[in-house]
Image (cartoon, rainbow, N blue to C red; front, top):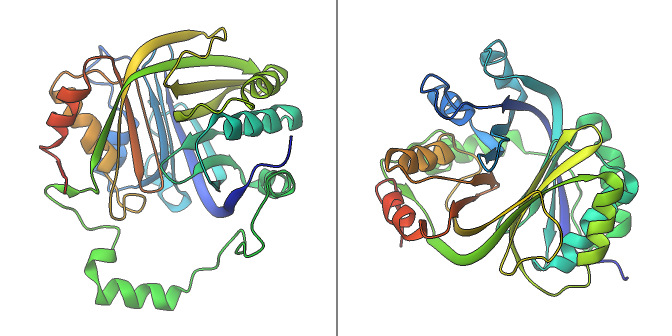
Length: 313
């Protein structure tokens, strides 16, 4: 198979991964990680939250300088203090792309903390010591444009400070009573599956799906153990391949100005649905995009509920 075309690769360093495992959903005193970070004004640049099945957890990526504010809280069971994010920008979200990527990860036994899709990109969270090797494999196996910018772009600190001072709306700390979005989309009649794979099984699964033209609507993954990846995949049709769990689902997907730079947005969305007693199977965010996966038949109520918190065009 020819290399799959992508628009680029982007590297960002100096993050920490915080993981809250085995969340007791019946225990009101168990505060989800996203609520704790919101109360402290700490932004997550990416997050996976899962309540499907027996594996309830939240895994979030924060700026390294904020880790000391939460490092000694008992409910957060695991920390990885030196991670980076690597994002690829695909041309499409067909299973061909995903299969190629999963096959690549399995064949090279590439370990990662999280892997999350959004409207515009697929983001890896990996140990910072592994970032050069991961980028090398991705850049060699994907077809990048000749005009591709440097993987790690340097920030002009002086210019950034000037713009934040002159244009307050560019500040990541600003808070809106109702958060502006570019719209909230609801996708229904979807199939949500979870899989547990060794690296070899991940490569085999990727090979099986990489010649399919079907679209996927969301995917996320994390390393359940050093040698096992837990994959979550949302598609229109059942994949016809054995899964750990599967259910009918709906997807709420939305993005807005500076979503990736501002704290509390994912927390306010999930808190809103919780207050309305609307169950959430899975939620993820990266960049400026948020995806919330719901049980079949709850999407319309959830979309209506979010209007209390989010403003749509």
